[in-house]
Length: 245
Ligand SMILES: NC(=O)c1ccc[n+]([C@@H]2O[C@H](COP(=O)([O-])OP(=O)(O)OC[C@H]3O[C@@H](n4cnc5c(N)ncnc54)[C@H](OP(=O)(O)O)[C@@H]3O)[C@@H](O)[C@H]2O)c1
Image (tube, rainbow, N blue to C red; front, side, top):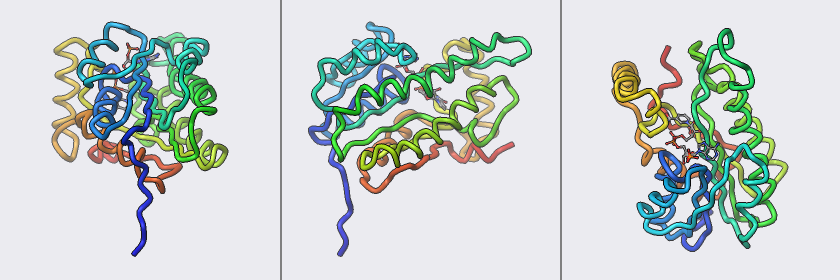
């Protein structure tokens, strides 16, 4: 009988950039349930404090993933990081014809530069059994023409980055979670009606008739964190959404 290599999360220290809401918060809760010690990172202290309460106990750190100094400071007092999860990021949509490129390039700062800062700073603290999970997205496979060209470039870049780093940082594993449309506060900036319209369209078009839940992404995240043979993987959790026109 073969032995399945599982990395136990019990007692592991998991740092989640973006852990105060949405996918990051659901991930923090899921790892906590499995016995992990959790640190959540985000820009807004009040959100972090509220999330720590929901999680049932978490260390919090304030940082902007795109700001190198603040990212490095997160790791100053840490002695070990078993898993580094990065879900921090916002929506930077805008058509090039009427949007300043610098505004669009925030997507690169948050998804490529930021993770590089965090990985570089965390690396001395990550054991050989540890892992890193970055966040991609379905625009990598299915561009939309709706002003998400730079996001598409960024998430495609995240996949390339993770695969290359998996070889460079071995045996530390590096994977990508690639969510489709997930019901999180990410869409709150569209207002109640705009948000409802986005999810109505999803129910009309997605094969499963609905968008996903952050808890479903968190379950996929657990697989990436705890299966010791998953490496350089891009795990889609999108209800099949990347294949619809
Ligand atoms: N929801 C979806 O449908 C979907 C689909 C594909 C990909 N994604 C990506 O998945 C990631 C998580 O999305 P979500 O839906 O969970 O969003 P969310 O609910 O808005 O959560 C985003 C989290 O990241 C933090 N954050 C945002 N910008 C940050 C920054 N510059 N530095 C540090 N922390 C930052 C937020 O806290 P603060 O604002 O307080 O910093 C919050 O904790 C994002 O990168 C998003 O683009 C989401």
